Length: 352
Image 1 (spheres, one colour):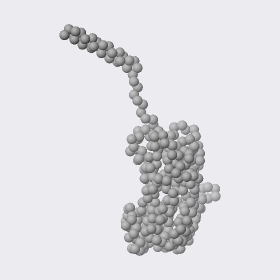
Image 2: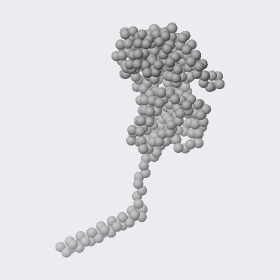
Image 3: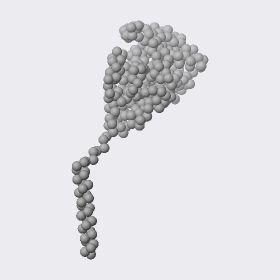
Image 4: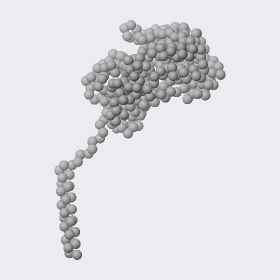
């Protein structure tokens, strides 16, 4: 028994000495806390105010704010407010900044300018209708460089096809901004669609900018649009309205012309509350969310932009405005197929 007590006492002394030594080591050299994950800075750039851009940015930021990485992401927002000189200066500033880890561009102008100048920072874009025609990428599957994005090839004609499959029309009209890469690429795309499907295509254009690169005065823009619509609308069964901040700002001219000539309209989703009959197009909010998913892959998983394909933006929607249909006296036989296929139905025009 005495031997057992002696052994126990000895073991206790040894344990005490060992724990004392270990404690002294930790006091002298405390273990540092594991550093938190790196904080990344994302710069969001757009060249103007435009509702689809707002939707895309909201989808992008909300997805990141709801992700597990929200504490490790800081987003800086920049809007050039249609001042392309300021946009150029902002891009020049990036050459001296070392704190930007990724750039999110919204729209063709900002994406083109950023991708032409910035080669060492990952770029993700959305809101670009024709990135190949704009010279931003060469392939929808891989850019081969520091840029990727969310889009869908031939998105204009995919939307028009949805309308055509519901109500086969014999002629289609468009007015577009000459000098706009998106608009000119879209007209080329629509022309091919019409030729393939035996649809007569009537189109007219108004200048995108003056010769010195500045915007036209508002009264000149309104006059040009009115003349273009007066030329096209009497000749067509259906009119397609392309996405454009200029068109959004002056949509009253479109709506009055549709009412005057009793021509049903289809177009981008942003115009559904303003008076088009049928809205068809990509869901910019979801595209923004998908762009955020790409940002997480690049920043936290080490994926290169060139490894991420661009043509994954496939979520399209069909919307219908009943008051707009009534305004142009759309026949019931055409109303019902659209109603049955619509993702959402609007009862009235909100902005007369």
